[in-house]
Image 1 (cartoon, rainbow, N blue to C red):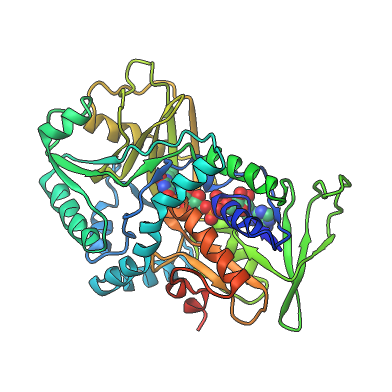
Image 2 (image 1 turned 30 degrees about the vertical axis):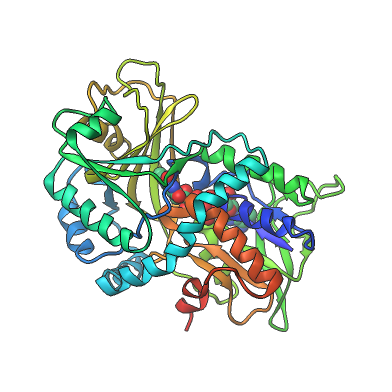
Amino acid sequence: MIVIGGGVIGICTAYYLARSGTAEVVVLERGDLAEGASRGNAGMISPGHPPINGPGRVRQAIRSLGDPLSPLYLAPRWDPGLVRWLWSFSRFCTEEHLEHAMASLAPLGLATPDLFQALVGEEELECDFRPSGYLEVCRSVTGLDAVRREARLIGRYGFETEELSADALREREPSIREDAVGGFAHADGSTVNPSRFVTELARAARNLGATIRPGTTVDRIEVASESVIGVRIRSTGESANGKELDAGEMIEAGTVVVATGSYSGGLLERLGVGLPIQPAKGYHEDRDPGRPGTPDLEQPCLLVERSVFCTPMDDFVRFAGTLEFSGLNHEIRPDRLEQLMRSASLYFDGVQVADPLDVWVGLRPCTPDGLPVIGGLPGYRGLYAATGHGMLGLTLGPVTGKLLAEHILEGKASLPIEPFDPGRFLR
Ligand SMILES: Cc1cc2nc3c(=O)[nH]c(=O)nc-3n(C[C@H](O)[C@H](O)[C@H](O)COP(=O)(O)OP(=O)(O)OC[C@H]3O[C@@H](n4cnc5c(N)ncnc54)[C@H](O)[C@@H]3O)c2cc1C
């Protein structure tokens, strides 16, 4: 079986396939492991987080355009694919769809904390796993009201939260500014160093017999008589027996999982399968916790009005956020990057713009309905997709891998994956 893509989704899928003991698994990754969005995300495991589709979202987005501190940025360029995607997204911004999305995602989210605990414990993953919960911090009454509504929504689906007064919030996180108005605590949340989680889980998958080949780009998926027969690679990489693979070489397999994040649409288009996945660019800036001007955070925080996640990790504090629709590119826009620390200065005392340890961009693979794509692709036996996880790919990585492995190997997943059927976009 071939898994294309060595991000969190591909590696989790490969791990659970290999763990069954019945599958010979090969992961093909064009760069290094955790090269894409999975490298530099905020590292938050937030099981009850609802998708961004919601009533009023489009109006809110339009109002925020032009505000330099808004997390949203739409590049001024003509992109028919993006226009179609935005139109489709707007049609999914309804109360009814939000309830459907929560009902679909909740079983996966509820299974997630135990899955992470088990993986980290059983496989001894050294990935800075911290089951510390996280705080949502609000600096406006409007923001707090919105979070209250969201807490009520997710509460109905089994995710408990606790409302905190401004004082209670500062007691838990003393660096929060005096003018914060309150917030919420999510005790079920946790954090990891996301790239270490992927590379450590890849090590565990290798120990279970999986072969992982970085530096191998899949050029196309080969099919015959409506069945997958393998993939053709573009550049060279190391083969299992140590020989160089030739560009254009075919690797045979009767099962292929496409887990190439924002690049999944392009790979599948060649087979006439059009998945509406748009890249939503996000940025991070890592700061030295010992330097003046970096808030000395004890807990991860989500800065609600600015959608910036602040995550303390072993060697740095990560500030991550922004949602930029500007196509499939990794260009860093300085004003967008600035949004992170300028936003942080509104929530924490003494934030200064100083030399960051690292800056980064990554592309979230987003579907218009805010739900991932998990399952078999209609029209081709043996072809599966696991992508489109948007803001929640790290959180939903293990449960996605587990359910897809069950679906492929046993014909049935232990939790419902029908709402994520790729066919919903292809009918
Ligand atoms: C700023 C930011 C913050 C985020 N914060 C969080 C968070 O706190 N919690 C959370 O749950 N999620 C978060 N996310 C979302 C999360 O990072 C993504 O949903 C997730 O990483 C997607 O994983 P993936 O494996 O699908 O894609 P990717 O990680 O992008 O992996 C796809 C891989 O496929 C490879 N590939 C592509 N084409 C080919 C090919 N033809 N052949 C071979 N290999 C190929 C790529 O090189 C890449 O390594 C955040 C995202 C961003 C940008």
